[in-house]
Length: 66
Image (cartoon, rainbow, N blue to C red; front, side):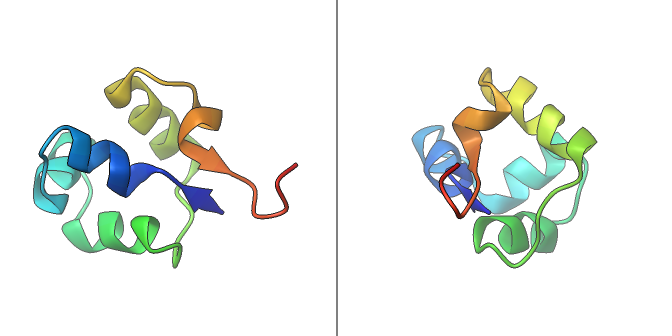
């Protein structure tokens, strides 16, 4: 699944550690999500959406583009 997490984080001048702290996950988890090695759980995706003030679909996109 593609995501805009790295861009959204950079726009706010947050480190991976800053985002991890806000989401209550490890920095390694943030890195794995940003690089597409790990897809977040639905509750975590909702938490990200609330944090950035966006809909989940504005952060994450299906690789197939559907």
